[in-house]
Length: 121
Image (cartoon, helix red, strand yellow):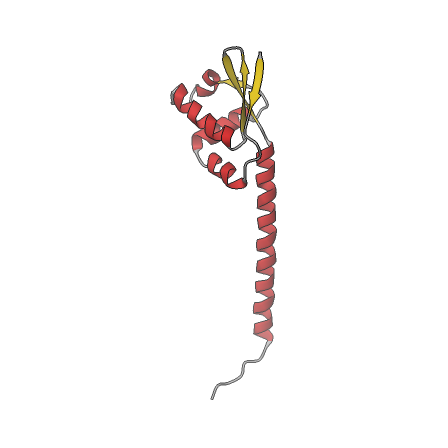
């Protein structure tokens, strides 16, 4: 019997927090090829116990970046790219807001430089 569970739509902060750990970032990199992997397959070469990797996978699952699929007695883990897409969209929006703000600041400074200054008495 196969069952699947995973987090719903996580906000950008939880995605960034989950990706802020080098081990979790490596787990996402390993899963990003689209293949499902078991805890044993994911633990190899990371220098951590299965329990440690499981905790990292749970954080990634809560952020929606990973989903677990139960196949018989074994859990397989798969990458879910949607939260990355939403986080990138969020960063694009913030980038445009900063670009707009910097453009307004530049226009203000340039206008101030063109305006003659009055002398104080």
